[in-house]
Image: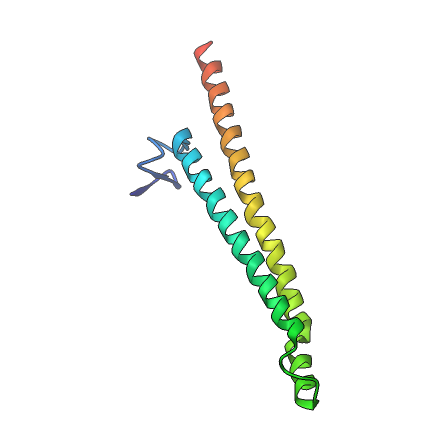
Length: 122
């Protein structure tokens, strides 16, 4: 359930007012699930691209005129090489996202704790 407060979207999970409350255990669980999913997706990507490269190396389309026309059309604009290169970049981004979110959560929680400590000392 979400609500608008002073044009800032809040939710029942964020507490009252326009602030964010990061629940450490929930963040840890979510990041653990992200890491598991990222590992699984990366493994599927690797096995899929290895299979694709083996199939391409077999060149089942032949070397006649039709086969040559097929491979030229198939590899136009980078073909599978471009797809694999772009996919590899996406896999790296997926892996980095978990680490970036983990850093953001840690930094936010430390900043919040420092602010709370500072406020209590007044």
